[in-house]
Length: 216
Image 1 (cartoon, rainbow, N blue to C red):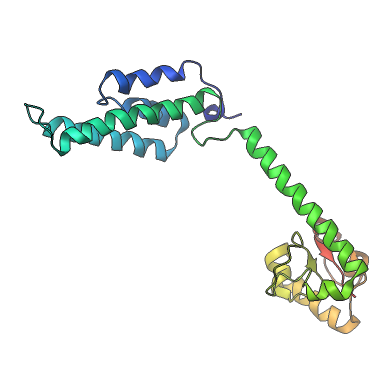
Image 2: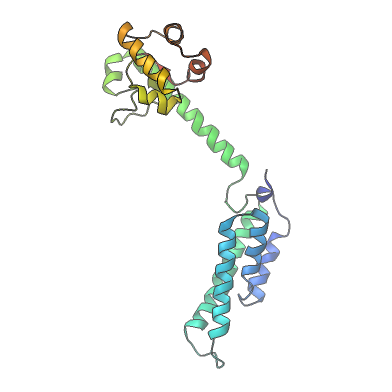
């Protein structure tokens, strides 16, 4: 957990600063937060509150009659206090200024990865059991317009070389070789043939194993 994600005891005490200062010191909690998180967004918020408070202070008439400066001062006070309370509440719970903890982000990433793996598993089964339907659904063909989500599969026996470069990070020379050999052989049966008949390293093929498919 990073410093900005760690729970901060006493963070809610900062709410008293804008509340008791009638909004004039609303920038102070956000200045502290900017220093803690090193995020430009918090610095910008602190500057905005400081400028708004200064304008209100300078232009409020002595008799405090209603005008734009009075409205601005009230807005800074009310909005600033509520804003500070919301942000400090998040910080106190250990979620940083971004609103999500590292654990939550990690769980979200893991869940998305597992969902993509499940999509690939189902698409592979469809390709094996119903190749015609799979072809119509363009499984493994990110180079073609389609609506079916196959989890990012790449059909080595069908995609053009630029897809191998763009999606797999293979060198352009090797990708062009794969396409040339494919045209000569007709198709690759599996990763072993891909390694045997081209100059692709086993490492590159193994690294892409999760997304590679070989249509008939």
